[in-house]
Length: 272
Ligand code: KMH
Ligand code: ZN
Image (cartoon, rainbow, N blue to C red; front, side, top):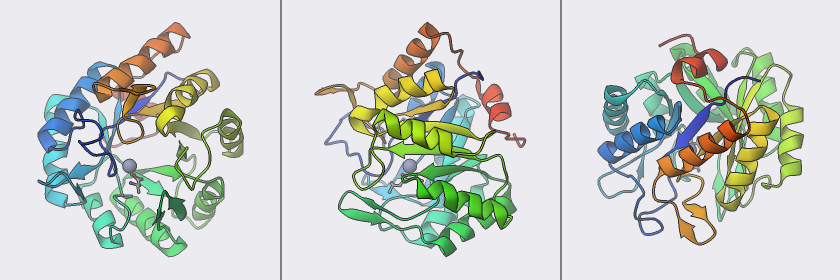
């Protein structure tokens, strides 16, 4: 089994400081939290940013500053979000790719998202994939529903994505696939052999899915984007606390933790 890649999803677009006062929202707070998570074992940071009011933003300048601030502290792989927040325009969502991060998220289909709709029609996904290819950005295929795997494979056939793909199973979003273990088994057995995958369990699904992924040979994403709690009714103190728990469990189970350099090799990222 490869070493375990832990991704930290620091703030996302939906969580609010009202929900967990420890939520990092400024670029400085995000960079500091990324660094603490790196020290706790994370090798990838899934990056969203917020504006001065703490609202989700796809502003290129804020992304640039956050990326520079993280790079000054450590060599984590930076994966920017092209999902943004529900309602963000396609132009806003694709804009930060011009910063040429090593990775970016690419959701391969439309899904209900709570009371909203996360809008990803085929032409939009193809446009984002083409842009990533032009800029040499490694996509992480975000899978909120099983059909999104097939959508990604269709983009491989069209030459817009390169095999082997790297997937992120986002499980437990209201409107998407559930976070039950049988669904993780199903998704992990549906991706083509040779693919890599990670799992992001939402809310209470985060920990059981993380443990299952460690055992199955997948990788793990944790963080306030997906879950603001440490345990039932107990708020997490930091993203790093959630990362540290995954590292601890993985080591107990005999799975070593990947450094950023090792994660680059596993994820086939050649550009430093
Ligand atoms: N905020 C969600 C609507 C991504 O980062 O690519 C979408 C999301 C996925 O967070
Ligand atoms: Zn995200």
